Length: 356
Image (cartoon, rainbow, N blue to C red; front, side, top):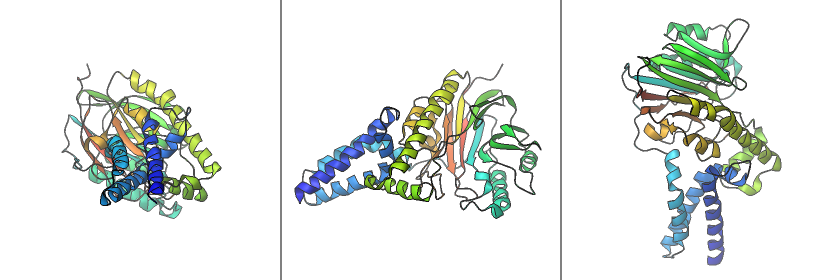
């Protein structure tokens, strides 16, 4: 029995440690570590259980899991923060606040078109109560019987940019709304990624609103993904894994080919906000963090889960990244359900030289 337990422990530790290399090995070269990252938290818990059991019996085999936990512990703060700063500062000329949200066409968690107007009103109320300087919205669209753009303009968001507009001039897809002047705009790829240079009190910041490709999972795929998230890799089907592989590789290309060159070439500080459709232990996340800081890690509190829908496990897949020269002074997640994502908001101290 002891030998079987040791073998199981070693297998779990091996899978757990393989998540280490996911941040360094491109998914196009080796997919397994990227797939295993979905099970990081369950495998961490299993290793803790193994260590406690071995300790209870006074066995030195506890060192197997303890060593693995020590090696992978640095990943935990990407999921959980205990001492954050969720309270937004008072409005200030040297502070820029940014809110990001995938509004999912205002259909809520259940994709109920009859509730879109109610969800849109909840969204407007959230914006009015918190008053961010900049809104980065994904899957934005007009709602019948309402003029969201006009309502936001009435709140002071007189500047806006979207790569796509309807025949009536309404923006849709990824959209940036700003209370501060926008001096330059552009889109990336198919227009799901856009950016605007925003000036506040002489400080220029490039705000990039992004929406990475979705996994587009059906009910069967969701069940398989949920099993992956609980460490049950044997139950996955080839079709589901193929979808995961395709999307993970797409995310890699979206960052390396489209966004990374833009971030590195920017002559002003950068904020990248939006729905990345990927988790903090992924290769995509580690690729972004080589250039930018994570506002949640800087000032967040709690688990930081941003997805509350049913077509993916509850993970943090929405982020606000920023250049190192910008100090993140606060970060907050709002547990309001007018979408299958939670809004997130960050405040930044503008550590830049005034624009000439």
